[in-house]
Length: 282
Image 1: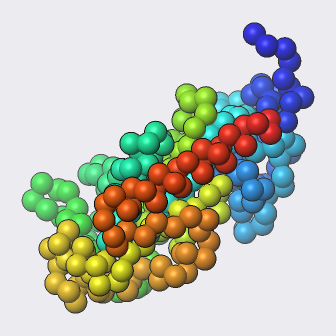
Image 2: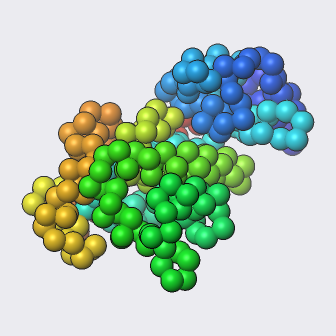
Image 3: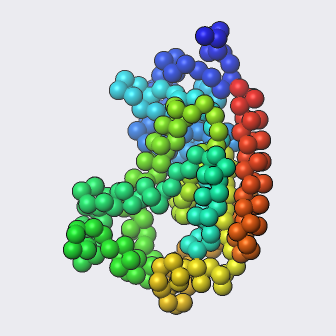
């Protein structure tokens, strides 16, 4: 075992970092998003929209335990990846995974929460009614999508019922990776990362985009929609130009798969450099 690292920047033993009173009520430590601090120094919002106080040690992810809020050391670079429907985001994610990134799919997490018996499932059915259930009791996502994408108010309602739970679960999985993996890159794939403000918790943001006409064609082919329906779903999302404003990296998928791969590989190489620099500062 190496010597005492308790004074080394970026390192503190968990049992030495249990200061729940340090943050006060505003930090709202029961919420994972208020327990994750990124390398850029951005601070998550605490209760009532107030900024939580900075921790007395650099860049921890904090995890609730039975006795106190203890720190799990940041070893990984946290990357958010987003893009609108039909942008080619899934292809980029698969390439990142092949290259060695630890990928968390927020949409897959949402699917889990929409399974019968979950609290989110019950809340969605309570808000929209049983008319959106299939005979087997599962939610007919296509039928529900037809309604919410035609109504901004209903779309906001649905997102408010699903995404807080998804956000919490995703952050929990990041914590699990930080505990089990010594280093590397974790990429969270989330369509509403920018709209929800979730992107502020990440070290780097990647936005995937493509030609608008190609985007419509992809959505039609994938979801079996008409051109009008596809355009309506695209229009219901934040314009990609707004998402690009917060991106450090962009992947344009209008070309060939090889071109998309080359862009993704170049970004991953740079992310590895960023991750190495982060660890070398400890």
